[in-house]
Length: 88
Image 1 (tube, rainbow, N blue to C red):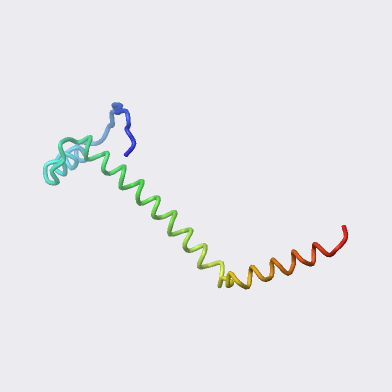
Image 2: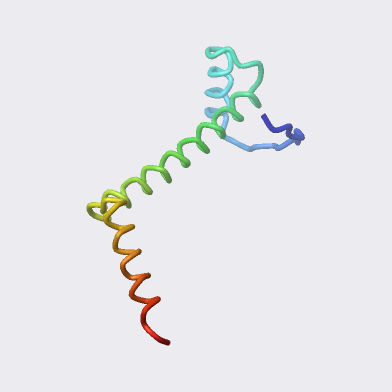
């Protein structure tokens, strides 16, 4: 895992959210509000990465059926041989 320098960040929030954070810290065994917020940020990063992956998978599905590698290779070799025979 990569070593990271820790910096301080102050966050303003309504008292109700602060109470929620403090309750989550106690209920879930976090050592501090900072640890809880770091975990939320990490989970958000993971969710966004999963969303990007799902979008890429959907792009692949939407692109239609693929072609067999041997067919693609044979077409490429045929075109290459034709191009080599054709004078420029």
